[in-house]
Amino acid sequence: MKIQYSNFKIFAFSALLLAFNCSDDDINTAPDGGGTLEEGTRWITVAAARMGEEAGDGNGGTLIYSINSDDAKDPTVSIEPFENGFIAPSNRTARLQSSEDGNTIFNISYAGETGGNYTKYTVEGGQNFTPTGSEISIAPYVGTAPRWIKLFDGDQTGSAVYVNTEDQLNDNGTPEDETDDFYSYTEAKIGVVTLDLVNSSINEFEEHVVRLTPEEEALGYYISRIDMPTLNEAGDKLYIGARLSKINPATLESDSDYEILGSKTIVLDYPSLLNPTVITSTVGYGNTNGYRSINAFEYNGSVYQANQSDPNGSHILKIDADNEYDNTYDFSLDDALGTQDAYILAWRPAANGKAVVAYRDATSIEGVAGAQGFFALVDLNAKTATKITGIPYDPDFYLFQYQGFVVDGTDIYLTQAPVGQNGNIYIVDTVTGDVTVGAELVNVEGSHFIGVF
Image (cartoon, rainbow, N blue to C red; front, side, top):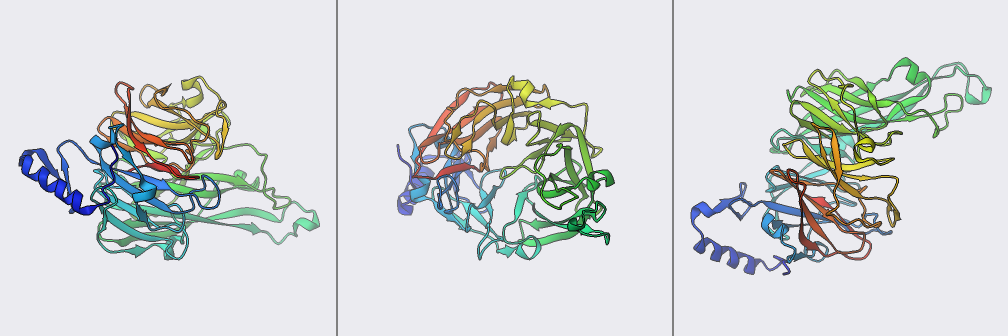
C-alpha cells in the first residue's frame, strides 16, 4: 500500500469519514492544530537528504514526510519523501528536531543565505507541515552554520554553540627562529546561545575563553569543536561536548599523531550560561561532541554521554548530579559486544534505560559513504549490549549523518536504507529486543534517509 497524502482533498475527506465513524474517545486531537490521530498513535516524520554533487553527501536539501505510527509499523505501506515530501528550508542538510509528542518540527537552516534561520511547523500528515509562530535568526550569535540541539525541558528551549580558535604567542621569536618558547597556548573562545522555541526569541548569549590545564596547553592541545548541549536533571547546569585537537608548539603545524586525552565536557551554569569549567573522564578517551545526532541524555538523575575516537573503542560515560564524571562507571562498547574499534555514530535511550546504538566496528565494510553500520541494544544500568540482527546490514548504509530516532514508550523507531536504495522504518522493542519491519522507504539515486522525528 502506497501512502502519499499529497492530495489534500482526499486526505480531508478521509479524515471526515473517520470523524463520523469514531467516538470522541477514539480520537486524539494533536495540540497546536496538528490534525487528528487515533488514540495511541503519534506522528512519525521521516527525514530524507537529497544528494548534492556526490552520492551520500546530503547537500541537495532535506525533505520531510509524516505518517502515523500505525502506518509506520506496516510493511505494506510505502512512502516517497523525495517525490512527495515537504522541503525543509536549508541550503544543505537541515538540522531538525521534533517535539516529544511528534506534533511539531523545529528547524534551523544550515548554511547559505538563510543559514541560522529558526522555523517551526505543525505536523499534519504527509507533506503537510504548517508554519507556526514567528521566525528568528540565530546567525548573529553563532553564525550561519550553527550546531544546535533541543534541550529536554518540555520543548521549551534550544541551544546552539560555536568555537573559534587562535594561537597565542609570546614575544620570544617565531618558529623560523628555531626557539621553543614563542608558543603560549591556543585560545578557544566559545559562544553559547539559548533560544525560546515557544516564542521565537533569544534567551541568553554568552562568550567565554575556555582553558585546558597548563600542562595540556603547553603541549599544544586545545578545544577545536563543541556540540550537543545537554541539561542536567536539576536544570541548573548545561553540559557541552568537546573535541580536542593538537598543534606542534615548535612549528604551529597541525599534529595528527598524538596521545588521545581523557574525554572532556564543558560545564556552564544554567540558564545564565556563566562560569565555564572543564571536566575530564579517566575512563573514556576521545571526543564527546558527537556529530549530527544528540550525543548525551539525562537518565535517572545522571547524564549519559557517548564518546568517539576512543583508542579503546567508544564508551558510554556517566556524569553524576555533582557535575563530575563518575569514573567508577566503565561501559566499553568493545567489551560489551565482544568486538573491536566500536565507534558510536548515533544513539538514543528510552525511559527504561535501554538504548539503541548505531555503530561501526572493525568488521564494517567500506561502502559508498565509508565504513558504516550496525545497531545494538544496550542497557545503561547493566552495562550490557547485544547486536540487533533483525535490521539488515549493508555496506552502503550511511549512519554518520544520522540525526533522529523516535522514542514512543519503550519502542524506538529508526530508518535503514542504503544510499540510493529503498529501505524501511524499523521499530525496536527495548524490553524484548524484538524488531518490527515497518513502512517501506522509497529512495532515489545517491540520496539517503537521516532519521525519524
